[in-house]
Amino acid sequence: MSIDFTTGHDVIVMARQNLSQDNWDYICGAAESETTLRRNRLALDCLAFRPRVLRDVRTIDTSTDFLDQKLRIPIVLAPMGGVERFSPNGGNDVDTAAAATGTMGFISTVTQPSLEEIAANSPHPKVFQIYVRGDDDWIRTLVRRVVKADYWGVALTVDSAFYGNRERLNPTQMALRRVPEREFQKGLTWDTVKLIQDEIGDRPFMLKGIMTAEDALLAVEHGVQVIYVSNHGGRQLDHLQGSMEVLPEIVAAVGGKAAVIIDGGFTRGTDIIKAIALGAKAVGIGRLQAWALGAGGAEGLIKCLELLETEIRTTMGLIGVTSLAQLDGSYITKVLPVRLPHEMSAFPHLPGERIV
Image (cartoon, rainbow, N blue to C red):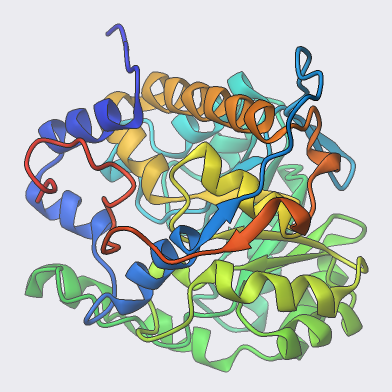
């Protein structure tokens, strides 16, 4: 199949055509009223650029250093359970796209194929994300498999003590998610963090699901190298702040003692530049990743990432910077949004008001 997307709109239209209603609702939906989902988008839409002019922008470098890894663009592929819903090769397609575009993939505990098979898909550095589904011995066994498979980093998701009430899912889908193994997620503490750190050695360790400066400070005190700001795309707790609302306070609290990355509503190159300007090192894409996989598998995701790279480069040139290191808060200002937020509001030219 030849993929010929020219804008993000093309990605979404093709994904909607290819995906079943159940899979579409699974990725597009969020918890309860979906207020957190919309606040993620609203937080981005309430920021505007302050461009500088008369600067030579003929040569632009979109790359960044994420700890000891160079990323071609400041994007990571956020962990998603059930990637095989959207693309037949599941996590292998995520890894293939990350390797092809110089980004980094986060592989979820609850995706297929096995962590060993995905590790063998390419030598490209990748992160394994942990959902705890057992006791301490279960954690040790899993982490030792991750270490043996030579994953570059490990992330622990910490915002899933309870499964969010995702009302777009049908009753059968919800029932499948209420399994006894999820109860172990309720018992996570800082002791769990220490247990994993002891097993992974000097690999980068990340906490995903941080939404307050207080928890970010605690993470730094416990030797966490990466603070992953996330509200699970609005899929866990409803009525949270948008991720971008809390990013500045978390960056300030961390004070450079850990890298900060973020996800939550990011679908455009302009979104990504806003986050970098306010202190994030990289940005995770989740729903957009799933839409791209649904639209065309690994090839679709590669093309989507290339579109984002073009948008990032264009945005950098138009605000007057030639490297991400030049960005800071002086390029951003607060404004009123111009449209109501929802999961598709960054794509106003879809057929009809929105795809359902």
